[in-house]
Image (cartoon, rainbow, N blue to C red; front, top):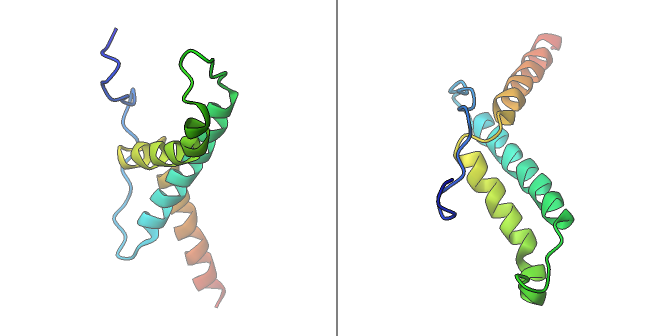
Length: 101
């Protein structure tokens, strides 16, 4: 078993994203960070924080901030593979709009 302070690493790296000239890749990564933050927040709400290890009202206040930061860090370290799919869809939509003109 690992040290509790060691970072959680993905079992396999997320697929590499293409390097577009504009900020679509950053938008896709930001979308992934927000999504992961939201599912992390929902996950944390299901955990029963017992009195023994509970942080009380302070923990309740900052739990959302913690989930958001966890989402940002997970996305920064490769995420869950959502950003490349979002980016590909954004490019497809943009190409479709350009072809419709």
